[in-house]
Amino acid sequence: MKYAVGLLICLVLFSCSTKKEETKAPISFETKTFRVESKGGCKSDTLQCAYFQVLYPQFTGIDSPVVKIINQKIDAAVSMGHPESQEKNMKDIGEIFIKDYDDFKSEIPDAFGGWHYTAEVNVEVLTDTLLSLSINDEYYTGGAHGGSGVYFINVNPKTGGEFTLDSLLKPNYEDVLTSLGNKIFRQTRQLADTASLNENYFEFSQDKFELNKNYGFKKEGIVFYYNSYEIAPYAAGPTEVLIPYSDLKDWIK
Image 1 (cartoon, rainbow, N blue to C red):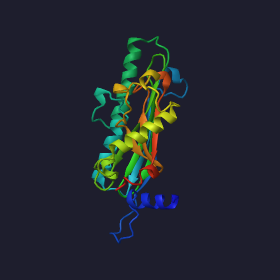
Image 2: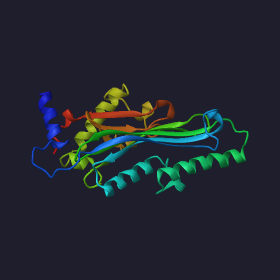
Image 3: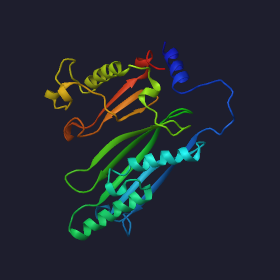
Image 4: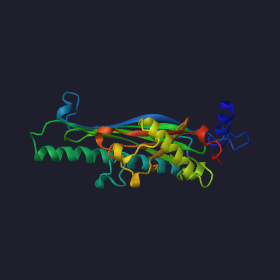
């Protein structure tokens, strides 16, 4: 049975076609590192400097216009929503981050602690029809504690178009997917099936579980990630809901 499910996923999701196609170089990638630091560097004292670092995949075997779209999405994901960083490339975003720190230190020279932003862009799934990336970031810009998050990029590497749940699942899947997500969420958070979400400090409208829009595709299943503060206080931390493909075998196109 497990073999049948795995074969189904391979055939439908990962496009294991045996048809003859035009010969083309396979899609591959190499992990690159971009880093920029305050003037003078951070090697001697990371408490008195700022650095911005991103590990990201550089793709080959994908058409240039699509690579451009993917890179733009990665740039947007590592911008931290900074207004000045909108539609900037990674180099510009890093330089803005360093400049903000320098300006801050000019205004408050006795402020303790340096700033940093680090992100790792991981390739979760890479096929001829789906590229799913997860962005894991961590940062500190002063205050009692820093922050972190996980975000996803899902595209069709042939076209650059967004790969959505609708791309994978048959119509009217929403209720089934939500029901599965609710079950796994409660198991993850050790909540009884009848327990109130709101009374356990999770903020869902009308005390009803909802899947969010922050989702990606892994080899095992579809993952929905709730970052800190999104549905619960910071102390509660993030929540990952992974719905196995095997639970969705009747809904995969």
